[in-house]
Structures are given as C-alpha cells and as structure tokens.
Image (tube, rainbow, N blue to C red; front, side, top):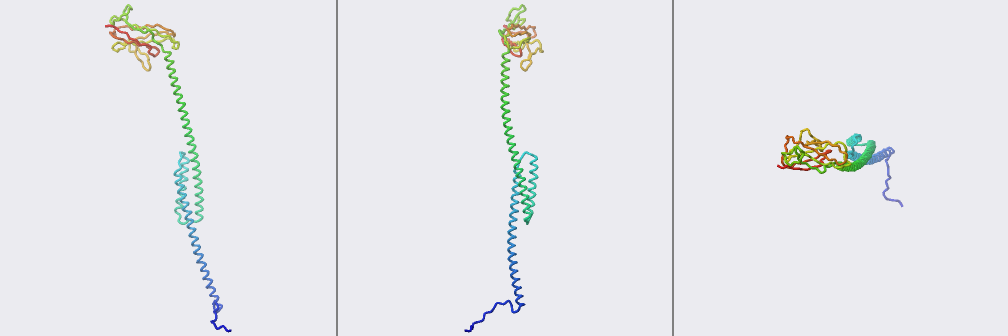
Length: 306
C-alpha cells in the first residue's frame, strides 16, 4: 500500500554547508553565553557568601578585642612594673581594634593576620593574668603571714606587759618589804630644863621620839630621817626654804632632819625642833610625819593647851 499521508520534515541546520556552519556557531555561542551567565551568578553568590564570612570573622575579632580591653581594665596589681606593661599591652589591643574597625572590606590574608595577632595578644594577656594571680596570691600569703606575725607580736607584747607588771608588783612588794617603820612614835613639848610641857608658851622645843623597826631587807648604812611638823593652822614649821628632800617625784620642805646609821636592827631615834620664835608655837593639835628612804614611815599628833 502506498502511504498517502503528509511527508515528515527532517531537522536541518541549513540548506547549505555555510548555513549549517553559521547555525552551529550561533548555537555554540548561545550555549557558551548561558554557561557564562550561570557561572557569573554562581560566583556572585559565592563571593557574597565569602564577604559575609569575612565580615563575620571581622566582627568576631572586634568583639574579642573589645573583651580583651575590658579584661585589661579589670586587671589590678600594686606592682608598678606590671602596671606599665599592662598599659602598653592594652594600648596595642586598642590600636588593633581601631585598625580592624576602619577596614571596609577585609581579605582572607588580612583576617588571617588579625586572627594571628589576636592569638598573640590573648596569650600575652593570659600571661599577665597568671602573673597577677600569682602576685595576688603571694600578697595574700604575705598578708596572712603579717597578720600571724602581728598576732604573735601582740601575744608576746601582752606577755611582756604582764611580766613587766609582775616585775613592778614584785618590786613594789620588795620595796614595801624593805620599808622601815617608825614604832612607838610620839611627840611632845619640852622646856629649857628638858621637862615635858603641854603649854605652847612654855615649850622651848618639840621632841619627836620613835624606834626604827627591824628589817633585814632594808638598805643599811647612813640614812637621813626627816620630820615635818604642821601647826594647827596648817602652817609647816621650817628653818629654811632650802631645807628640802625628795618624796616621790617632788622636793618638799622639812622641819628637822637627823642622820642615823642603820644596821637592820631596831634603832631608837630622837629628833628636836627648836622654837626660835620665827614660827611661834600656838595652842591646838599638831601633826607629825616621819620620812626615810623616800617613804612616809609614821604619823602622829599631839596638842598644846591654851
């Protein structure tokens, strides 16, 4: 049977060889252009992603540098040398932070260099942190040792004060133990014949009689015995304003004085006040005080009648 349908057209690049060659060139160029366009958009996307990555790295570097600046602010020490080094190191961090912030588009090489510098600066800061921690720990140890030394010193000082106090108390006891006493102390007026009188107008002298007590701890040898006689009107009977003796921290006047030789045994003593009329005797009660070795060793009173 004969096919009576419409005959099929065959694909042809052209009727002639020249047409076919030109059409192939056009197809090739179109395909090439398509590939170039596709590659362009792909590279553009990759470049954009690279820029985003570099910017993210830049931001990360800036954040880390800012944290390092703040960390340097918190580092404190009393060591002037380390403080000067900290200032220099912090200045380097600030300078790098400023430099990174001024870059608009950073390259891989720049980011790599900055990351290396950040690593170096971080290591420097850690080194200072270790040094400061070590110094602070040592300072705390020294402060603890200082407190311990002060506490020990206070304990020793307290013991010394207690010992000094005990020493003073012992010295006072020894001093009291060595202090003499005026035993059987009495005073009375006598006339020119040596007889006792109780009338102030007839008395030529005042006689003070007593016995120095026995004391084996008292200092032996020559001793000055001082007598102070006070009239009823509180006037002290004296011969001269220069007649003074030491009592405690003062130099006070005395009425009469006698030197005796004391050997540790009881010693009778008589001391006389001569009435020369300069300080006339008056009626009333008189007070007599006896002193030896800087101590008041006895007190008594007597009276003259009107």
